[in-house]
Image (cartoon, rainbow, N blue to C red):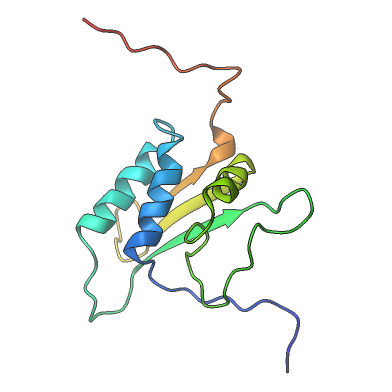
Length: 135
């Protein structure tokens, strides 16, 4: 019996999914650097595939002006929010509020959650990036 509530399942993100998220975070450097570097480490040092997954990546995007996401997502899609999107759809999606987090609860005593939200960045119109200084 369907309750009308979407079903969500956590799954380990694939390498292409993490790379898609990294490219989105790259547009917000240096503000997204902590999560960006954590995801790079995640790719370089994957967890044991035979053991239980400890790290998960969470992504959330605001709905568009029409109240719809840019593309329906599969129920078991885990972190597939940026995968297989058209470049113009990704650009439109990144203009709306979104956040991403890397959660690893196996690291007791260490940082367990890294979060980035694009609304924490100053807009380019109001705060232009400083030009590089060459010495």
